[in-house]
Length: 318
Image (cartoon, rainbow, N blue to C red; front, side, top):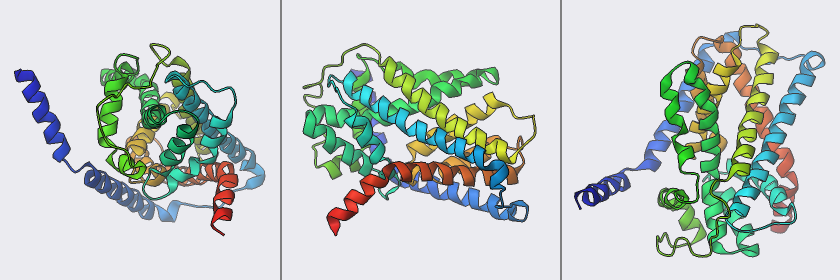
């Protein structure tokens, strides 16, 4: 009984915390941190590039970003299938790719809304809601799993495997309930009651662990990293780069950009975190220009793949 009372007090305390305000503060501080470093090193930064020499590298980085979007879409397809909805076509993958650009729209929930509505039409509201809510958790778990390679530097990285423990049939409902309680804005936009009753209704998880979806999410993060790594090698020709170290800090930085939805697409947060974590291992002017070009390449990939969706949306308004 004492445990239940203390547990209830703990959750009441968490609900009183203004997480939205904290995320906004973190986003502003991250953006400010990046801007300070940028203007401090602006005299050492050159945006001039030789396309004849580096064009292939930028194109390969772009292809990696495109591949990452498709891997992410395939992972979502298997997440939906894991919840008990079978798909014989690739319509789900195509729709995910087309709506990916909406993550850059202020609010940070409109890509979730479109995907929820799409699944709801061909399935039921429960599968639509839970598969939409849980997808970022899959990405976070995959990114943290890659970051555990930092065990070679510190045993503390072992604790990053903790989110993965909950990705199983017995504990996944607990994760979804907690995510649901933190996604109040999404529930409001979808006009759904944030209720814990009948949570498992019409959900039939087909296996104990979502192996395929997790592997695809790992591929998604790795593809993003390869795109970043190729871009970095374009500007930094030294052979002193430690790829494992870069993968660890990339995964951690990308994770922080993911969990701060105040920033559209993690803009500002990812860059500031990576700049902070990389320290003096790479010259600041090199990492700054790499981050700027990688953001342009990554966003361009999203825009190109989402272009048909944007055209269709705009044509309906005209």
